Image 1 (spheres, rainbow, N blue to C red):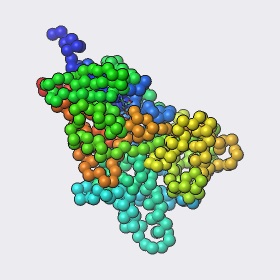
Image 2: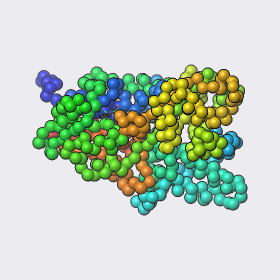
Image 3: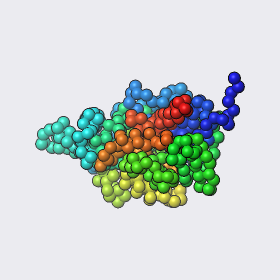
Length: 478
Ligand SMILES: Cc1cc2nc3c(=O)[nH]c(=O)nc-3n(C[C@H](O)[C@H](O)[C@H](O)COP(=O)(O)OP(=O)(O)OC[C@H]3O[C@@H](n4cnc5c(N)ncnc54)[C@H](O)[C@@H]3O)c2cc1C
């Protein structure tokens, strides 16, 4: 029997060429659909390619399903597991002894693990107002009892160390819902960094779509008109230039932050439960600052090549530049395998600090950008081992910073998170994930991922795969 003409195959429009859209296109093509991708940017890749040097940390629970880790292995992309050693500078700038830093950090992570379990088991009875920070503060008293100075100091240190949670979700730990802390559990497992770039992984994800789909760049979708019922008409998509296209199905992968701001793009309006879901879930604001030196002076002469992770707790010694005492943290890219080592420290900044920094350098020419960021971060990097004022090796060669929160195609943020006050976060995700198949409209993207991978690159991939499979099933059933 002759193969059916391509024209007769149902035609699906995927809006957005990030990981979720590309994976969705791949699955649909495998099932014989015609696929057209509309991407607003001049390039494909979405959020994974907005990182300087293409570097993305990957977090996953050991042994869990993780397509990006699997693709990294398949494409021989080197992964790095950080050493367990970490440096903690107290709020006065003193380095904690190694053993103390390790034991307090272990205690903190044990408490966070408990919080995940507690929130999963007792979510229904946990008040919406409770935060992860409240849980940690209560547990710290239980786990470090006593009224002597050491106990008091240790409790304070653990509470301050808990601020590192902000760099996982993009908002302070006091804003993290305890009721729905379990939805963030993917961040609790083993952490791996890609040591080089995302290039090979991305090539593997994008190849099927590049080969088999029509990809139209610079096509910003502004309106989606859905039929009242599947059999009443097709679904149409209008672009910024006013062009209107009809399709059998539309998969929208625009970021949650875009959906929040563009609810009026849907005509007729989306069902109320989906609109509520989009409103209720938050978008984190995480940014990265890469500071590269002529050499990794902080590792010289150290047996263990320095810690992978360093945290400056609530700094009280930089009041000129950081009067709010926003904590600072870095990952040390000089700790990679010898062939991939870079003399770079990578700051993760979030919440008000990230908004302050992105606003500070917005539109500034290179030299001023460098000067402003160097002034802000120097109080921290100048505490690293071997730092000497005036020494050429200790002066940054380059400073790169991201501005995801200023980019509306990124949804003006990093990825979804679940804040204090949210009542039914799991229901919100499910409502968006379900979409409106009866109106030929589907949603994919990190905010619709399986619960164990919400907000991640792996989750985005899985969400695209799931929607592609659901559409194929729908047509099989017709
Ligand atoms: C700061 C930061 C740190 C991160 N850290 C990690 C990490 O450590 N580990 C991890 O696994 N993940 C991390 N992520 C998350 C990961 O990058 C995302 O989850 C993933 O890339 C999202 O893919 P997506 O397909 O859902 O969305 P996107 O990649 O955003 O794709 C959506 C696409 O839609 C396009 N678009 C938007 N609006 C329109 C429109 N109107 N018309 C047409 N096209 C449009 C966009 O240009 C984009 O290409 C991080 C993200 C950020 C920003």
